[in-house]
Length: 276
Image (tube, rainbow, N blue to C red; front, top):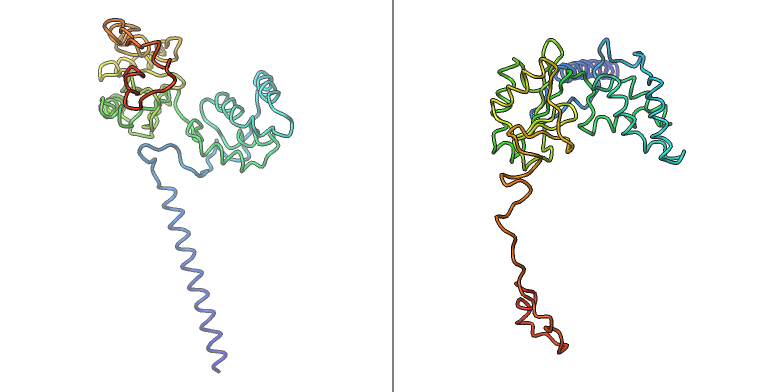
């Protein structure tokens, strides 16, 4: 009787554990589905299937891009084809319209002779890869310290108010995607926004609205040869005096050419000898 009761108790505990596990799994899955884009972050680090993004979705490079892909592969030995993974992912993303469907990552894995998970690891690590669709104009606003001090929060608010979207969202017409990101390396010309591949810098509320209106007309101004366009009229990182940062040419300090003639130097006179 004791053994029978013990077996029943064990069975009841197993069922309870199974129920709790199922509930916990459901709660985690629900939480994952509801997870929003983190401020200063990028897309989610896991894959969520959708009708236009699943393993059965077809993707293949165009003939023109196969030529480019082969040109990339020729830079590496055959046993290091995986070294071409990042440029091939970039090529696939451009062909797919600015994002990487699962099928595109699988195609890159096939070309590089690696397991698909190796490609997923790379694509989910680097913020340059978008694993969910983005708008025609993908705007990444730098929100790190120099840009924040110079007004990036006003730039973010201006875009959100003008387009009616929030951080991490895309407009209903699929034209604009907005994302706040970490430093983009244009601190000298803060605040700035990266629109697709190009930098638009030295922004103000008015010039940001000007850019948004131009994008709506598909008339985004071309950047200079440096890949950027300061919106305040300056050229690249040049200051008010152009390519000069000093008001006059400095006079170099005088250095005695005979200072080491005796072969010995008094440590106390090092600063003098070094022209400090």
